[in-house]
Length: 507
Ligand code: PAF
Figure 1 (tube, rainbow, N blue to C red):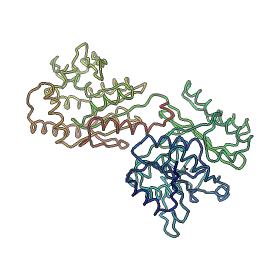
Figure 2 (cartoon, helix red, strand yellow):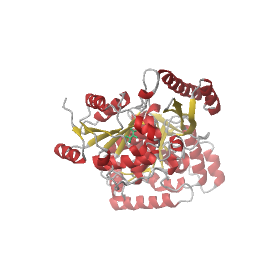
Figure 3 (tube, rainbow, N blue to C red):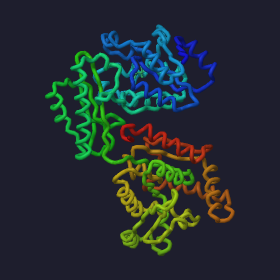
Figure 4 (cartoon, rainbow, N blue to C red):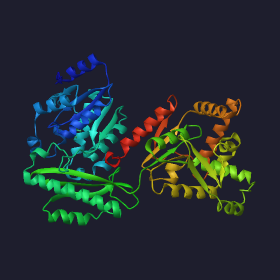
């Protein structure tokens, strides 16, 4: 095993140029442990990339000088561990190399994400982290950067920074790695005396105990936990129950939350957390007609073993039935009495297909006709229709574990969905796809321009109707699918899903 140690930016550039490969980057501050080994192993999974691990004790992220002085330095052992785990090179720069005097571009971490938990007790720490990670990314130019869920607040802050500066790097993380006694691996564990280690163990044990109770009661009693920790003589710096994504104090309607704390053992500060979830996650996929939503949603549901909630099909089925029964849907009374007798069900059949049944009529194929396409939007804009179907959709979504597609899923039906996607494509691309789809169904040759006009008209109606118009939810991720295959879009969304939901909750 050859050990490639790069000490300067120049050496790093030469190494990168001589290899001509993308880089998977694992930034560390050294004193590597089995958590880091797992990070390297994870980064090795992207076989086409080279793995570069950096060891740089960043002075800017130490709010306490003493902490910086006593931070464990174990370079030779680190190099051995990193190389044995598969790192292709180690970047070991001096401080001046990363932060040349008077040339530091200082960054500020997101205020919202850094004002509580650790940020409240380590002033300037996350600014220092952002400053060094930004600088390292600029130097290393990685394709992917690997971090641990163990430092969840740091992970959220780095993700926010990357998005804010529009940095072209993917961020992947691994779940908190724990030792056999349940303590998370940390470079600071070496500083613990035996008795202190027992305290950390008891702290982690309390968190897991709280999770067990939460799974039954769906509540966290912070004061009880604080009292129990005090009785065990554990000095708690903070213990908070917060929303796992924005770190605001948890409220009853939040689904994924985090119980996080820091304790002081002797002169060492250690953090740990657990994630809590009330129902399985919901993925909301919105977008205009012909963006590929249905196909993509179906495949995602299959991949994640989620229920596929095809809300578009519900509107189509209702439109079909209203037409068939010749209901005057302009008349509120007639419409309400009609709706009170409606039952729409989805039945899985072989493959990833699912049948749409409305009051015992299997309308799976019929609802895809051009006739239904041309009326569904105006029927979907009727207040009573929307209210009825939104209620039905929420009922299906109560237990979570669903992926739903439509036009107002993220904005109206499931505003608390864990992942919101706005899937779109240019009008030409959408018309092309719909034409192929309809022709493949044996509907003869379809007039492209006519279809394009219809789609444009539908976009206009959907976006301008008064009730639940098609809008991109503020927190939705927009994907423009032109030039991507269906499978590439599916992989992208599944990838975002796995990087959004804490890994611990997938296990
Ligand atoms: O998590 C760490 O080890 C550090 O904060 C990091 C990301 C390497 C930045 O110095």
